[in-house]
Length: 108
Image 1 (cartoon, rainbow, N blue to C red):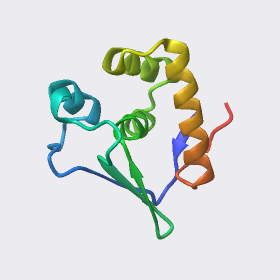
Image 2 (image 1 turned 30 degrees about the vertical axis):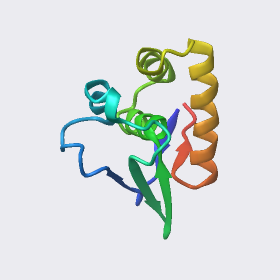
Image 3 (image 1 turned 180 degrees about the horizontal axis):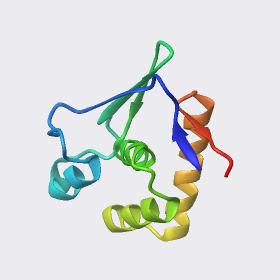
Image 4 (image 1 turned 135 degrees about the vertical axis):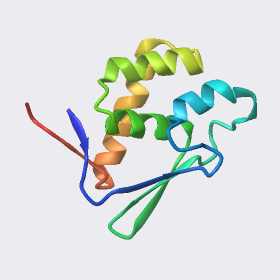
């Protein structure tokens, strides 16, 4: 299980209203979004990481304690990728978040 570390700050793009997830925003505005462009920022220990659409979705899912299968389902729906491709991308991003001190692995 992956958990956001204490002290990590998250700020999504100003166009996304409070109470709306990045995933919901992307579904409603798919034509307007550049999936590679930054849509959120994470701040940890005086470092800033820009998150693109997929990174922001993963971050919010971790924040909401969603499991990897739930995140995969969102990726399949939004990006039209296979579940295996989604899982590979999500796991790679998990590692990047761990390396940057944003999340930690919690052993059950």
